Image 1 (tube, one colour):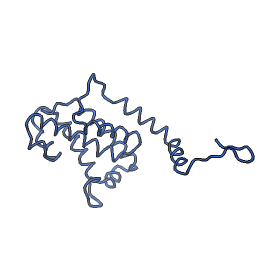
Image 2: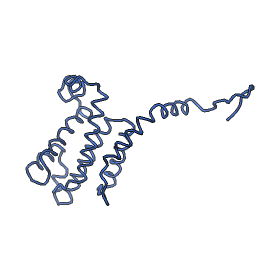
Image 3: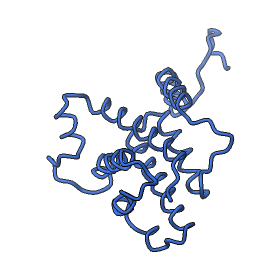
Image 4: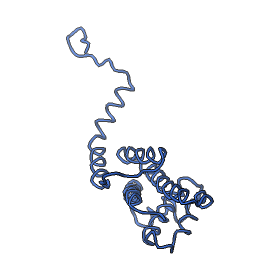
Length: 181
């Protein structure tokens, strides 16, 4: 490090480097806590079948987003991961048309077939409804949007999103154990 005329250290980093280091220091404890949480619940198998390269990469993006507290991204990407797993399974079993259907229709078509527990399909549908206001325009007071949900339970949006994100990764982990057909 350089010294000034009086022998004091001179911080010669640019403003971007300083700001990023301050952010790292300020958020390190929370990120470490979320990192530990993720791996505490991460399913431990001898081999996990992620499916396609895209599915594998989505899974790792979910992990990174959760650790960094990007909860909306966790909701969106967790559902994307689960949806892809279901679509890939349907395609493998020769159900090409069904594999291209919407997630809502896939869930409806899987209901009652006996391979996936109904409670799990219900939780996936709830995840879909929580995700939808972030990817589809909704009315301001729509019952599924974040404002309505936080108002109904009198909680802070950040807390609700963190709870939603934890539920989403739990469902994603559970989807790794489920046989679609």
